[in-house]
Amino acid sequence: MTAGGRRRGVRRGAGHGRRPGPGRSRPAEGRPSQRMPQPDPAEVLVVGGGAAGSLAAIAAAEAGARVLLLEKMPRLGSKLLMSGKGRCNLTNRAPLDEFIAAFGETGSLLRNVFHRFFVDDLCRFFEAQDLSLKTERGGRVFPESGEAAAVVDVLMRELDRCGVMVRPASAVEAVLIQGGAVRGVALLRRDPVARGQGAPGARAAPAGAGGRAQEVQPTIPAPPTIPARAVVLATGGASYPQTGSSGDGYRIAEALGHRIIPPRPALVPLVLAEPIPREWRQVTLRHVRVTLLADGGTLDERFGEAFFVRDGIAGPAVLPLSRRAGAALEAGRRVEIILNLKPALSAEKLDARLQREFAAHGQPGSPWAILKQLLPLKLIAAMLVQWGIDPQMRGSEISREQRRRLRELLQSLRFQVRGLRPLAEAIITAGGVATNEVDPRTLASRHVAGLFLAGELLDIDAETGGYNLQAAFSTGWVAGRAAAEHVTARGSQT
Figure 1: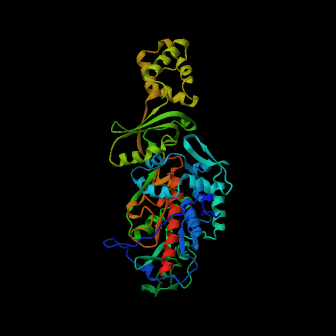
Figure 2: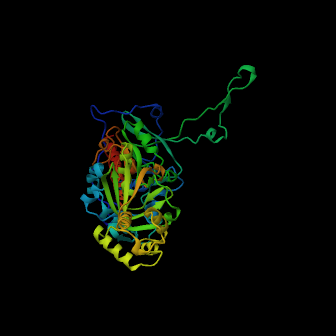
Figure 3: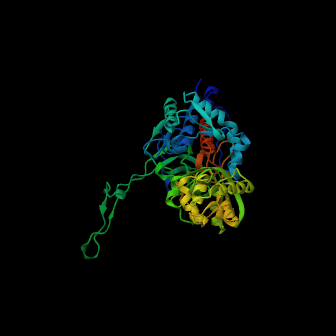
């Protein structure tokens, strides 16, 4: 049985490309589309060799299409290799409704997609290639080996087995259209003038006043083109541009008439107004509660791990707060976070414990000795400064008010948020192609026949925990399958 059958977890379903209907906007057919490419063996072009693009190419090839995968980087899966801190959190075992809820308002697009290719299908796909998987805390699914490279290796082998032609180091400049339908792509021209190497066919302009030659005016050849009857855009977002996800797909999709929700960072560290003590940057705070506030009101709250970075705070309990923090900052609101370092204790129980500790420490230096029982060592010096107390005091000398102040620091350590780290440092990108401009059954463009969109390029993003990678794999499979069915249907009509 092939990867398209049940053993590999790939379910077959119907999908059709969608032409622009009456009243729908058509993209302007500009200069690139006037130069139509010559016939080529590929029927489906997949642009982008990440999670979404790789599975789109495999699904299209399994459905019988001749497929060419174009990747701008020298190798496939660069961002996959970084995911999950190099361990690749493939998916999550959460129920369907919980899974969709993790994507917020735009998650409704994924209901149809997940009914066609979901967690069990993805796990069967990888396990059929002898990649053992394991489920960890919170339902997170990883390769048993803990190596993202093993995931990329499986995808590369499957691309080869399915006969997908792979062309690395090939950046796409534009999708070519004619009559409202895809006709191929134009590749980014490798312009030697831009690299300072001169250009074939360059000629000097006539001399100007004083006999000086004007600027060299090169004769630049037209960009190379590749024909196809369907294109799957799976170029990723705009985070981690060093992996190839530099926002190219937004520009290409917008030129084809698609509305782009402005890209912004998601799952990114928060930048704090207060300076972070150097020694705090080496400490991971476990089992803490992080509360996000805007103008004093609670926006969100998370529990888990957090750690300080050079100018702010990050960690699994912090990153999911970044999207709402960014929106509040854009609205001009005062944004703060509160760290509860002792969330398992009520205020009353913590106060009673502090009283016992103070009573038990009668010697000078009690504040340091008490904090050693409550905090990581590297936090203590700066916490004593925050507490504003003489570290040489005896426990019996500490007043009720000073005890209350310490309790507040332990359960309500407050920081002002002044921004987010840049989009280039975000784990994923929020924003992208508006989800109401693609058919939820096939991910076909509502503007251009034969165009399909998948992965982070779409305006879908979720929390950490494997949700985003599952969405990439699922949208890639659905788009690739639908692209193959589109060219098959077109072929039967000719």
